[in-house]
Length: 298
Image 1 (cartoon, rainbow, N blue to C red):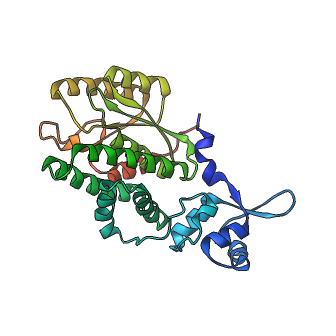
Image 2 (image 1 turned 60 degrees about the horizontal axis):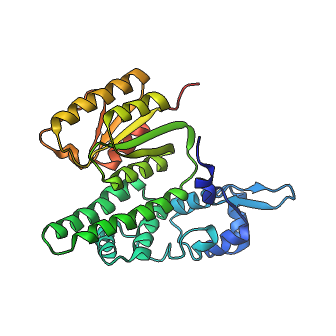
Image 3 (image 1 turned 180 degrees about the vertical axis):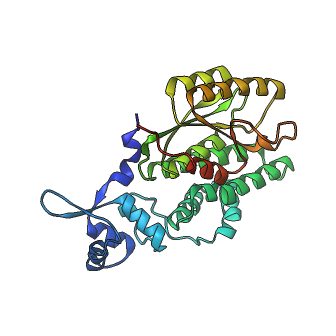
């Protein structure tokens, strides 16, 4: 069942006065926008107008308006106060992660999201680039290895906060994901989870480094519409292919769509095509594939 508490932030109802102060406009202007249908509103039993935070965020994303007091909407207080230029974001995020400046990193990600950028695009063009450069610095001994792991923990916390502020998912669009046995890199899997949630899916991770037998059992037990496999590394290509075939058989039996994503797909020893599964080398490809899957028939 969907976790209702997880989406309580965007389900919260706020007053026109709160929204007006958060955006930096007069209350009369805000009410006029509601009357014009720019921001949907509801009425309480007492006749007072209220707005869902999710509809306010959608208005901000579409209008590109900046926030003056984001904390009034339950968003981080630093939102809306940084430069939203996408081209400079990877370098700024990389430097912020290396410096363990979590507020700055949160601000960069949230501002791009509030500016209307999809989570998939942010993941591919900002987060992935920043972490690739951090990994290169660690490999060249220009940065200590612990900094890469620390950056991963910071990004997990930011993604968790972002997930809490995404609009509630479609309860009929269920997705599960995991990493295969021996793959303990949970950050890419969590990014995929966030991307799918941003696309309206009720997506959840079932675990890291799980045997393919267990992954196949999850597919058969849960009967979800989509299963994604995040693969950052493969220790034994032969064992991986054999296990993958078992997972593929399970998805075929249940009619579950299978998406495989992760850096390991660039391994030259793996086949260029994955019959019966979508090969997603980027988060935008994952989002596009998920968009081709229609709602579950009743």
